[in-house]
Length: 99
Image 1: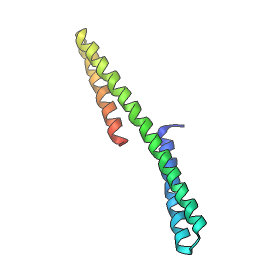
Image 2 (image 1 turned 135 degrees about the vertical axis):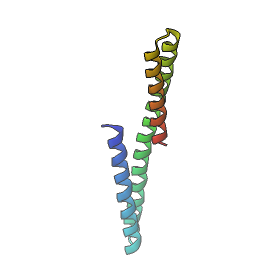
Image 3 (image 1 turned 90 degrees about the horizontal axis):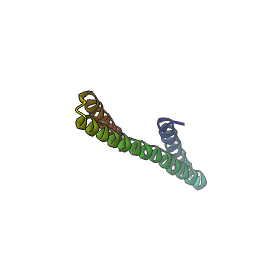
Image 4 (image 1 turned 90 degrees about the vertical axis):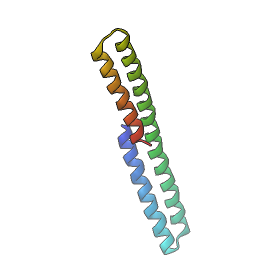
């Protein structure tokens, strides 16, 4: 399962938990409220876990790009250097999108 799908599932579960928690609070059902709160926390944890994995993947991509750019510079290969810089930028963007 992709991180985007896990993130979406987590957000959905978090939202459903919030709804259940508030309905339980409105109708005075403590059990329903507690179950909703638990579901909300589980959803948030799943969402944050997927975001964390994406940040890690982004950091790895950033480092790989930095290395590729340095190798391109070392061997005077402009194309490889530019590809490395692009990969590094893509990795940084991936990390920022998942903060």
